[in-house]
Length: 222
Image (cartoon, rainbow, N blue to C red):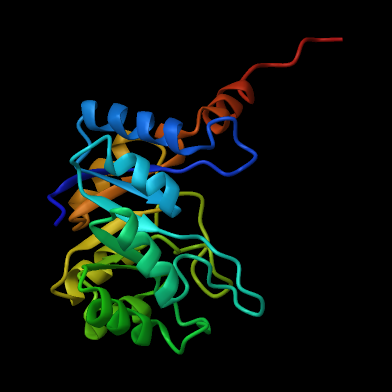
């Protein structure tokens, strides 16, 4: 199980030069040395490689596109099984109210707990989704998808209001995730009731970090 602290998301898309299990495992080791309390990782191959490289708890996901469904974060039981068998300690699923391939988010949460007997990390985008995920038995509720669905609040930074509301309303640990860029934002999340905070791009994506800094370079006068 997770302990209170920083979770580092070690993921890289196929078009990223860092894509690949060996590099993600090295990234996870670096995160552990830096003080991370856990790792979030995508796809069985990456998870298996990271599992061989660190003893930190791994939150595993499997991003899969399924025709006709917007949900892609571990969208069905087969995806969850692959994640668990690869070595993830906790399985994260899309727990939004959007249609799921095998029923509802609550159905998936219950199936994962019943069939795989692993803790479930519910990625939500809104308050009512977090409430429903907790009722369905999720062990953690995370604000991961806030601002990434059509009907959730949009913003440039973390959704601290959603975080605070969920922390007040449910008994399971609430994890803050999404659009964290600075240590100050992480500090604020804990003040708003976070049990843990997940940071990805700001730590593990040098390409995006470089773009942010490069954008600050002034243009030369013509």
